[in-house]
Image (cartoon, rainbow, N blue to C red; front, side, top):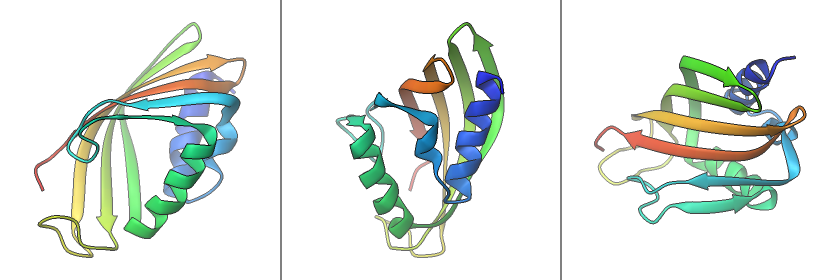
Length: 127
């Protein structure tokens, strides 16, 4: 499986609420740069990602990842993604059942066939 295919499988596993974290190396780090939901940004280990995934399943009824562009160069995959999430709980001006949208630029650095580092630049539509 190519690294680009691994990224697609990872995003699909998130949508399906499957084991998306199996795509990561044990010492993986994910960085989320400041955005409307996380104004100060975040740096997460694999353990942190597990906790965030569990919390996310309580906040969202569903989510989808539409890959707009995917580029692979050496051990890096860059993805432009249109994300949509349907809320299970109220969030600011939104109610359960309302949809959120965002455009993500995500950079994945691989070691072998595992994601070692993920950097997210998330741009949410107003909510």
